[in-house]
Image (tube, rainbow over all chains, first blue to last red; front, side, top):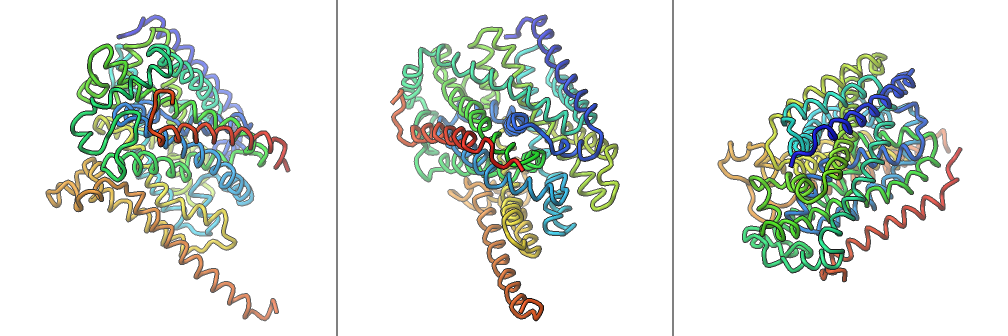
Length: 527
Length: 36
């Protein structure tokens, strides 16, 4: 259903005007490079919480993972558990405060810059920046695709026009307004998302006859699980897949652990901690962040699974059969367009625009500053040039848009899990040691970073069939979809790469600490 | 309960809500801490 174009144009125009106004406010407040890079380190706790949450939650979470819940069921709720437990509580309380304190002391302005300064190593800064430049455009493209698909479903605007259109709007306020504009717009976008998702949850349950009736209907649909999914271990939409089955491994290792742990070492989220004036701001942000994430992912996964009830009652098909071409990324947009009133379709389009733009703006900013501050200008004065970083943001926006046009369908959730898994495998142990060890050891960090990244890439390219099929390298070189059979082919690279990079850094850091102790004991200066 | 029979799914929902409450309590208890 295409909604009334006049209403749609009016609402979209108001929304875009508000974003440009906030972008202009950011532009006016941006006087120094520190303003452009870390919002002057004086962000308000409410803005930090909403900006963190809105950056964290993109169209990928709502459309991509909502579609995965429609396909694989409510087991994804375990990702919400990790999103809140690790992504908010652990991230703010354990990592956030230390990151803010160290970032402020060392005057770090980006995540690679922070690691480079803690380890006193350009290698750490450059390699971290390089992983961002290589991996983040894939995630950015997935977010772009999610937004463009919904606009195409809802309006008569073509896919390519909508993709270019909203990339351009975000580009303008990120390039000129820097992180202050990003966080101001994020906060308003986060508020819109909160309203949209709350109404979506209530409207869906009302439509399906209430909580008990809707859930019971979904439970009763278990015999309708498609044969290929049932063979893989799926038992229904309100039950977990069979423990250890290929679908259980996909749900738990890729979707739940990949994204749940991956969020802890996301460069664009770590920067949020460095924008806080003091730890009080971060304490207060936790109060808003937790409920916000529940209302985003908890609602997306619940409604995603429940779309099966709606499609079965109206079309006699389960959700994935109702989706054009079986593309799970189209299920949520299709459900919204067919099941809910026109005014909500318009509101939800703005919600999705807000979700996409709030994530895109941070990704554009992080990639641009990684390209200029961490790779091109590393350690030199020009690294902090505002004009140079603006050019860097523009270059990375163009690269991401090109990748979005090249990527296949049904890719949103997978591309997101890939980037988050790579970040966790390569960055998380190094980041944890950096903020908590007395003397973070450079050799241990280098070995861990390289182990995490290399093992992740090898497993993604040659073992995990979902990822390997995206790259096509394994098939081209060996003629096989994966070098190993099940269950390994269903195991996410993160599950292998992260423990290995943890073991490497723990052993080498322990060895370095022992060596330092001996040096201190032998040193006559301290005797 | 509420039309869902799998204890693992119910535990997932229960933990999600429990952790949100923990976030709220943590935020309120530390509302004025860490200012300097």
